[in-house]
Amino acid sequence: MWVPANLIHGVKVKDLRVIPDERGYLMEMLREDDPIFEGIGQTYLTACYPGVVKGWHYHHEQTDHFVCVSGMAKVVLYDGREDSPTKGLINEFFMGIQNPILVKIPPLVMHGFKGVSADQALIVNHPTKPYRYSEPDEFRLPWDSPSIPYDWDRHNG
Image (cartoon, rainbow, N blue to C red):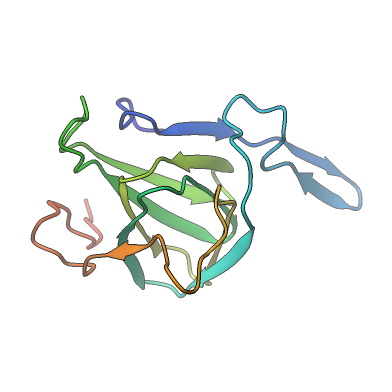
């Protein structure tokens, strides 16, 4: 498992257990007995086409639990919380088939992701609250917002 050296306050990473056999494999994502488990409001799948950025957004109440189950995604977090000891910190996670991890994203931490594999990236999220259609707990900024010091471009080297 590869994760950033300094994690944003409240962010947790879980190395996922992959159990292979001659039929294929099983991958556990989130269990009730995990130390990071807070409950599940719903589970959904979101697809991201290669090179597409989905971001930025955050929640006031909801904690997200991202797992990339197909392809590869660059998941980026930004801590803009005024009272946080890691205010201004950015975390990048390259997650998916080559790095099977779960990333726990606390409320008020900005997050987004970009498909970085040749095929679409599929991300499963287990948020702690169900989506409220009449009053969503989802707040957005443009993917290229100048208030977040992050460049989504690939940096060749």
